[in-house]
View 1 (cartoon, rainbow, N blue to C red):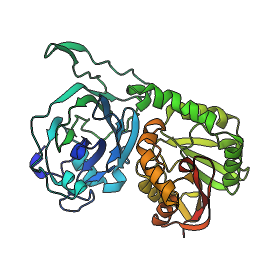
View 2 (view 1 turned 30 degrees about the vertical axis):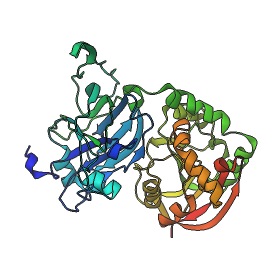
View 3 (view 1 turned 120 degrees about the horizontal axis):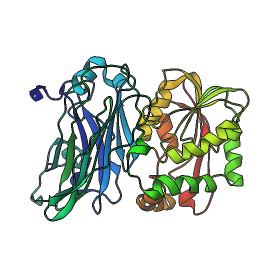
View 4 (view 1 turned 180 degrees about the vertical axis):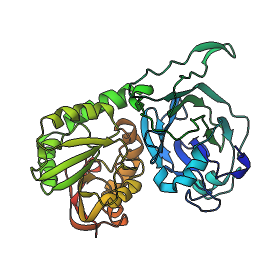
Length: 427
């Protein structure tokens, strides 16, 4: 591997606390610099996303290189078990992907100061006079897992050893299996001044491109927060089925027909409202508990329901293959909603429509100010949900034409209840 040929040789980044902000991102570098298929020197990435607790405690960052379909490989980034970005082979082309991904990798864990990425984020030059060096990074553990075959294997547990300044630490745990590849590490960081953390994630994948089956699922592999991954999906299942919400679900779903994609299907609360004229529903949702609850409703539904993915930002569907897309209270939570809308546009057939009911930014200045202030806290307690996204503007920016749009306050307080309901078609 000739590392002098960056970025063609590939780089997988996890970055935290950019410019000392509680935000993180995931990025793939590849191709040529400048420009190229990975938009260098920026790379293909998630952009900065809110990361509550990143400056105060350990968080588990994970990356899966999925080789189950060798003609359509992907890399997905996770924070505490929740997917927040996916890059796919189809985005950059097979030759560029092979050069960037299909070879040996190595791992770098560092505290980085300055550089083009933080400069682009803050619109400044870094490091600045207030920047200081010497910050410490505490790594809880680093583990690499590989798997192949049709049956799942339990992830090996990191082994505890001594030798971390008198404290217990963990060593790398590996499994003697190949194909799909997971990297997992947990860390806590001390922030001092204007700094940016970057982990260059480099792993040792198999060298041949042979068909394999990804047996370890993300929700089996990672340690996940009990609240976000177990309690919250069940709470939403109860809260989001009230009488008025149910009537809205029925109204939005009424126009569905043909091949349907539902993003953010959650626990399947829309399933009872699928019209009989729907040929099939492809469902996408990142929450394992939600999918389990939805499976029970799907089993009782006369319309076939197929769970096809976990990330609306990288839909595993062909171009122009879907007649209608259904989204109910989902765009508020997707990390890069603009990317998800671009994917919706891609998979919709010309004349197909996005049917939606979402909450978002209110037009009243006073309410909007409250929404902006509450959003960081609301993201923590509501699984990343933002109160202040301009839903109609985002849909229109994706190239979809709004044919019907109703806006109103559904609930009090108004900051939580400004609602967008409508239909937007692909021309």
